[in-house]
Every structure is written in C-alpha cells, then in structure tokens.
Length: 393
Ligand code: ATP
Ligand code: MG
Image (cartoon, rainbow, N blue to C red; front, side, top):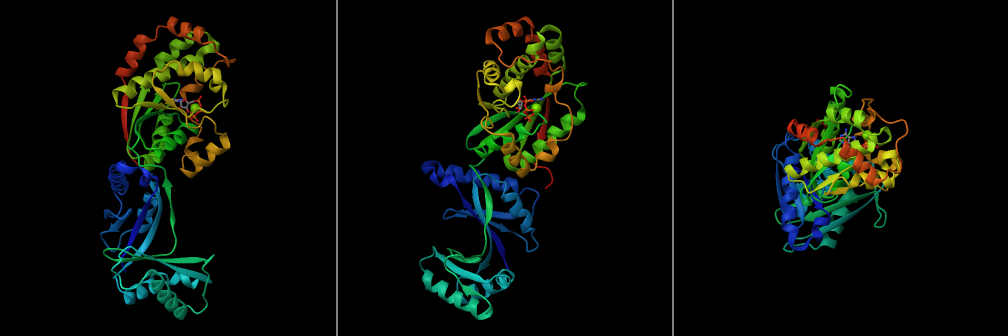
C-alpha cells in the first residue's frame, strides 16, 4: 500500500499576494530538511503540500520527524493513497487503519471532496465507509461528537487519501521569509532558545561566538557547534563565526574599572557582532537576554549594552522566566548539551561587584580609554568560520 505525507500549511495562507513566494520557500525548506532521508517527491496543490516517498521501503517515521521541525507547517498527516472509487477507498481504509480501529471503541468518518466530479457526495462517502467499518469491526460504535478515532477521506484531483490522526507541525513561518539575523550564541541555555524562536518567525540565521582560549577550551567551542546543530534541524544551515576574544578580554581586565568589566565586554560583543552581521547580509542581532536574570541584564545594563550597537537587537526571551526558557530548550533538545559544564568567556574575569546600574557616559568613557579599535579589527581579521547543518537525529 502506498503511503504519503500530506502537509497543512499555517499562517502563510494569510499572506495574500506573497503567498506564492512563501509557499515556494516552504517547499524549498522542506526539500532541504529531507536531505539525506529517503528520497521523496514534493509537490503542492489546493493549499496542501504532498511529500511522496519514491521507494516502497522509505523510512516514513524519519521523514515525519524531520518535517515536524520545518517552520510554516501546522500539521501533517500520514495517509494511504487509494484509487478514486469507493471499492478501493474502502478496502484501503480497512486494511490501513486496522490496528487503529482494533484498539478503539468509537469512531467517525469525515470526507472532504475537493474533486467535485467524484460521483458520491461527502455524506454518502461517510455513510458507506462507516457502514463497512462497522461491519468489519463489530466492537466499534459511531460517535460523531467525541470519537476516539476520526477517519478522514480526502478525495482530491489524482487520488483519494485516507488518514486517522494528525502530527503537530512546528508552526511559525518559513525560515528565510523574514530575512537574515545574527545570533550571539554562548554555550548556555538561553541563546539557543532565542535562536530557535527567531528562526520560527522566519529569520535565516548566522551565529557569532566569542572564544577566549586558553581561558575557554576547545570543548566549549565544540559544545556551541553541537547546540547549533540542534537549532539547525529547525533553522536550516547556519554559518558560525568564532571570534578570537582573548586579547580584548585581557585588555578589559588590565585597563578598565573592575565593576565595568562585564558591561564593556558586552558592548564590544555587540559592536563586533554588528560588523559581522553587516558583512554577511544580516539586518538584526539576536541575544538570549532576559530582563533581570543576571547583573548584566538589569534594565540599565541592557540600555548600556544596547547603546553600543546601531543595529536593531531582538531579545525574544526578554519577558520570559527561566522555567519557560528551559521548557523550550528541552523541547528542542538543547538543554542536556547546554548544562554541560564548560566555561564561557562571560565567566572569565567576572568582577566581584558588577555595576547593576551602569551610567552610560562613564561606561562609554571607560571603553574609549581602553583603546579597543585596533584589537577589534584584528579579531575581525581572524574569524574562524564553521558551516553547521542538522546533526544526526
Ligand atoms: P546564555 O544561557 O545564552 O549563555 P546567559 O543567561 O548565560 O545566557 P549572559 O552570559 O549574560 O546570559 O549572556 C547574555 C547573552 O549574550 C547570551 O544569551 C548570548 O546571546 C550572548 N553571549 C554570552 N556569551 C557569549 C559568547 N561567548 N559568544 C556569543 N554570545 C554570547
Ligand atoms: Mg551565558
């Protein structure tokens, strides 16, 4: 029996004239997400996208698992394909759904007939198929209000499709439909979640990570790569730029007031990230900051950090509690990696008493006195670039 996946698209339906562009972008993203899985043909018709495996032995579980991470998809159905006549629809439904129906006690049939030439109307399809199901599975009864199983028959242009059950899609809008953004990624819990949230709203991602060897280790950098591989299962390929930050951090330590170490470091991170974003076609920066979470994320500290960049900075976690952030990080499978105990450059040279209410003009002056211009250029000349694609499922 031939099985395919029917995809129902979400918000892109609302986008009027842009709809066609959105849909072709979504189809491209779907094809990319299936790279390396069993080969499939991907087509669209009547606001449904069809993913049709080319071989009988295709791993449809894996195909669905990948499709569930593609933003812009609201729901998907695994469906059996039947010829467009009642005999074939009935026999296909009875054998395809056997296990489901065996284990249930109530059901209902719903029919959608987009091919109006099909001789039976929807209610007639429901009655006939319902009757056959009751005949074969005599323990079942019909419940039109709250059935345990809803059997759906979709009679479309080229075939009929039968399914019972729905898989939830990732929602959001297709990656790339909102442009490009640059995520400042640490090895922590928050920034991978922030990256995922903005990819969900259609941003294609670049990433910047600041590394300060020997204070931070290669293993800390590898951890960031593994985190981005998880994000990439949703966001598509990501280019990671690793910034050599040691000289700048040592200079902060040697030449800036201790209580401003962190805030000056964060301003330099924003400035360097903005330069990378500009050079690589991104129009915004993204961080994992959440208001009040740590000393560098008080309102005044964020204002002082934000002053360093001209580019818009998205902080999707700003109003979220740690609990809520952790829930998402578990869902996207980054949590266990994030809690591995490798040091981040943010925890190198941390002041004993960081300023929680920094005054902008003093911070600007202290940064100016530190003469970071040349070091910033040197760091930008020595970026390491790593191409990230989805890790193994
Ligand atoms: P996270 O869990 O994402 O590490 P955090 O709560 O530990 O966040 P901070 O360490 O203050 O917070 O960092 C705030 C934000 O700054 C991070 O979410 C991230 O966007 C950025 N950031 C921190 N360290 C780095 C780094 N080494 N490289 C790039 N960006 C960083
Ligand atoms: Mg951190």
